[in-house]
Length: 255
Image 1 (tube, rainbow, N blue to C red):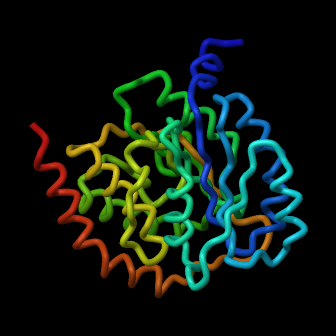
Image 2: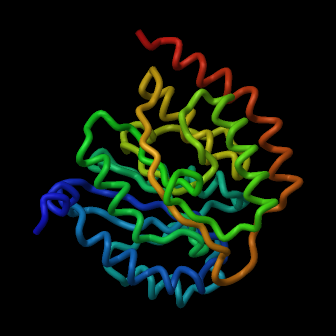
Image 3: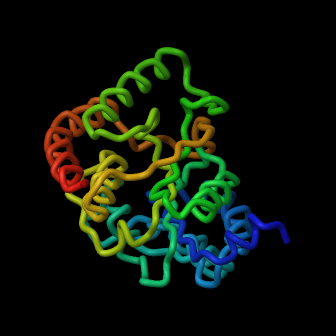
């Protein structure tokens, strides 16, 4: 066993995947995620947060019978991405060392997870390790105009939030679990990705130590996206002034 594997094996990791009617993708992700979780500490698990009434109950049951897999249903009328993230946070325990967020549509490679966790294991000063499409070595399948729009928005987001990230809107990040456990989101939808950074900063009481590593993005494998661009942009415009106030207030305690 390598030194990196020994360090990873000492950490209890919770991988949270918001998944609204993503059963075809979840079946394909199950084996690779279950296998990679076996290299982490006892109690590591993949927390799938599905719709309130699983549309594929037989598939849900099959997944729950696999090693390291937990399927959790959202409460009725709680169907947004932010609701799923909140339900995932409720599953964290005091034994968890790291929480990783991973989309359920196969747009991200689960093989990135050990590297994210390993970076936290090697450097106790780090709070967050973020997968990035926009650092050297990062990749995305999006066409040029979408890449330019995304990079522009991420530049604005990072400046407003005061975080040193080129890709803060990518959901794939590994956090020290105590920074998020027991916390409550105010987000309504996909802006929860950025609010997690706000919450972690508030928990720490000062600026986060963040490492950004190369990551990849591809179009979803099965199904259609639930994200609608007009609503997506609108919610960001509404929530970000408040996020900026919260994160600046938390950072002001830094001595």
